[in-house]
Image (cartoon, rainbow, N blue to C red):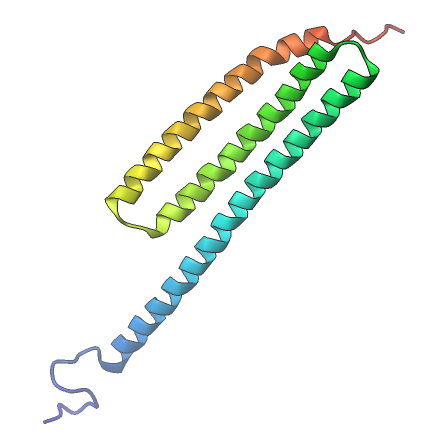
Length: 148
């Protein structure tokens, strides 16, 4: 027996409920796809930043090692360039990890995320501390500009 609608008795939502379920499933798929794209993009950016940092540090070191006798200063400046690059890359990787875990709602994934973020944050902190200690020494070793 019908209750004056096309829906069977007890089905208050009917086809509109099925439509919303389908829309929710479609949006969920889009969000998961975008999450995967953004995660991959963050990881690619981290790789790119590291590659550029290592390349710049190598150029600094080789240029100074071949043409100047002060290779220890070149080594220090190269380390600073790489340190800044690694710090930025770690930030991108933390973002990628957060994005990756955002889709999962399991507690073990969330605990793993917390552990990864803690380790990467400590590494980033230590790296920035080493950079800040080395920056004044590197600036002091540069020749002073000539007075006019």
